[in-house]
Amino acid sequence: MSRKNEKMIVQGYYSDNSLGSIEMEQPYSDTTAGIHYGMPVTGTNFLQMLERFRQAPSSANPPFRNLWWVEFSKASIFRILAQEECEYVRMYFVIPDATKNEVSLALHGVDSAHNTIHKEGLLELCQSMQGLAGPFNDPDLLQNLTNQIPAIEEKGNGGTGFPLSDAKNVKSMDDFYTELEKDNLNFNQLSLCQFVEKFLVFADK
Image 1: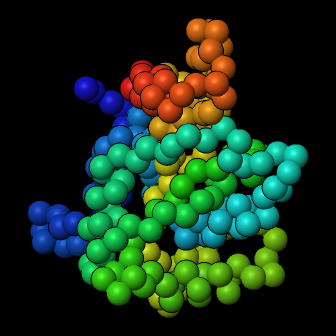
Image 2 (image 1 turned 180 degrees about the horizontal axis):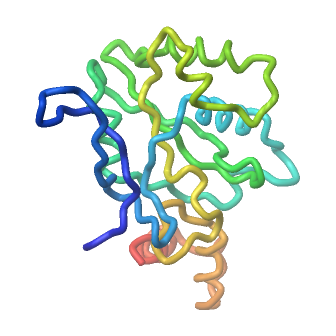
């Protein structure tokens, strides 16, 4: 299936054997629909998303109210696993968009001892952000670090909110309730088997 993908910049060798930047297509990053199934984010963005989740209110506007799942592309997961010493993928609850209170997931790599890869870089970055008022200048903060930042992926850097367009990598609970209402079904009165049957049909649409 053809996609109009975002471009990514990688380091590689030119014909004169010099090292330079090469522009490539980034899989699963369809710009025409504005839907991404996992995209890299900066460490600065990750720390902000993590902080939004920590500060999220738990009563009037709960962040989990319409989340069923988050889907990441294999390209996104492979970028995490491709890091040297990466043996596991750790998933964090985050809030990508400062204007919404809707949960997503962010991923980064963990080594065989279950330690965060390049943790020192995240801690150093956090110290650099301390006391500064956002929005942050990510390039300036990152280029002054002495430690490397881990590869971090999020489901699409906020995407387009709930509900998304036809292809949904973050699925809304409200959408599922709407489907049940169309069939005159009550979510709380479904048996386990009825729920699973309806839910899987909904998930695969």
